[in-house]
Length: 98
Image (cartoon, rainbow, N blue to C red; front, side, top):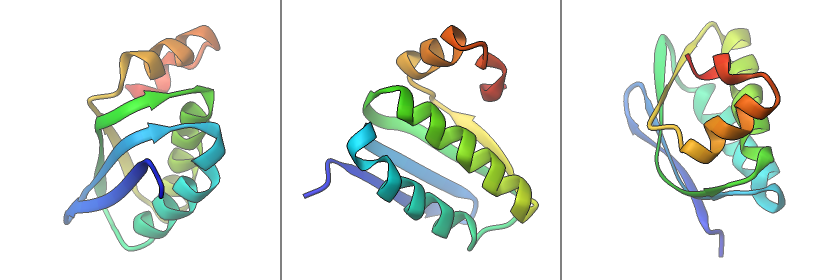
């Protein structure tokens, strides 16, 4: 059983919850890509339910930004975990959450 979930909680909102970790990130990314493909405009990605991250969570976000750009979407991060922001800062990508 997966210890993560990605769901569409509104017309223009994705909710991520659970652990965003390396072992599951490929499946999580597929789910995010699929849901983004069904949306348009400015999409909020709410991370408030995320309990744990590793560096692959940052990779997930960067891939989601790239996918959104291809689809003509704008992604707005909401409630980004401090650990995820710290990882971004360590590699000089803190601006990816602004």
